[in-house]
Image (cartoon, rainbow, N blue to C red; front, top):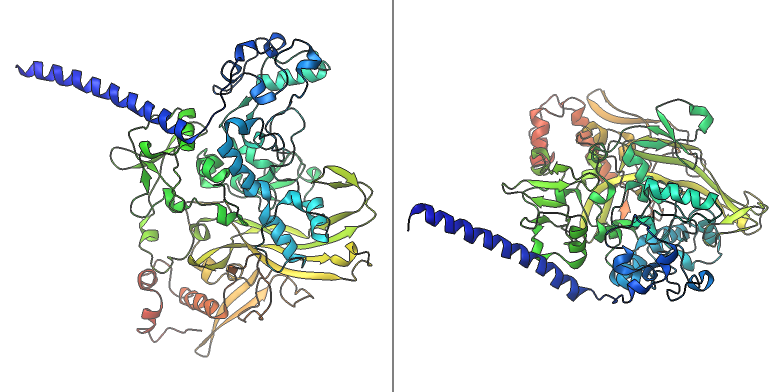
Length: 627
């Protein structure tokens, strides 16, 4: 056989092989999908009477089109009559709320519903647990709770008045898209998308007193935008606003008219621009990192968010090589996302999360070994750079979290006072959604921002340094709820909380910003100075804030300057998260003293990253003066 004939037959065989390969890939998806999930067979779609009135509607997502699943699979009702009143009987106008999800969304998506019902976004367990702990109604902040099961204790009423708005069980009762003011809505909270045409049609429908029926239906799909996260996650630790680079202030809208350094969000809170997260600058969405497995949860009950969140920076910015999985091994949920996103990297390895093993299907390893992330907003390819050498070879900071060094700022809230106004005539219960009399009120002294403080997470997984914020330096007038006079029974709490700032930058905070920064060490803002007098070194701290009369510490402090925290003092919202001990403070300040003379890029300081500071103390220069 001639060479050109060999080439011809080789080409034919290759084409046939690729065709068979792609067929088997698709078959593998279908087989896996069917085995893992059970679906309700939807029959008689063509006989539904709904479209007799709602003709020529459009805007549906590909997988929720009435041609495939009908109308009643989502909206229920009676599809066997043309009578308006009869056909609408039992109809769910806004399907997807958790109150109806078992007979709407959950019929086709039972696994996802189970996970959502157990997720922290539904239970709010950690919020309830910490609040009850601080009010003295629980011995630990680690209890398991559900926000919809709370009653009317002082803490419960506090949650009802100030906190219970943000949970997936809250009902979406009005037509319209998800906005900054949206809270809850079950499946709608993430999966409801209105096109501009659908918004316009809705406006015409309402203004016509529901006579002009909309032609454009909102879509229910997996294209989750940051706006879906914003309503709830712009509160508390303010992750959504931090990610965009904005810090909350106490200013009014009238204070910042035409000032581009500020923005006013829909609930009229005023924000000042500081610096946005590097991932936000690249157009990445929240769900580029927090995938369906993480957002909806894994079906297990958790108390605190750090237990539920599995993805880590090092999953994408790995040290040597990433953890990966092949397309053939993807679970059914991941395969669905892969299909809906119309991804093409069937033949490439996908990155998996180290802690849970769940895949990030918008990533792949290319033919030359580079890791790539596909942006879910625009399909843009983002190279995933491995850890820089300074991180991967640094032995001295192995237990320091990425966020501790790479967060450019975080929020600070101090001077918070809570008291109950028994005479408030228009008190609104956020849980029951009704008005009553009497309400807890919160008064905040100051919002600000800074580099995060540092705290120690110590548990069975080891000991890690993580960012912390003065989240709960506050007073609670418990007596006001019990009918006593204001100020008669007030408790004071100085609590810092672990924090994920979501203000990541490629640059890192310098060495001094940890080792000789009073805020980082927990002393609060002020001047921390290393002085050498008569051959002796000493650290001196002058706080910026006055001392709080309740414990004689600076208003924003976490711990006293170079003193042990008294035994029994509760100073954290977690039992496995604490400030630095006296010995740890001394170790940090020892390095800070060295940095007083040695630049951080000097030979000796670089050497300390590999061996630690202790071996270098054995060969001190005579000119060195340590504290």
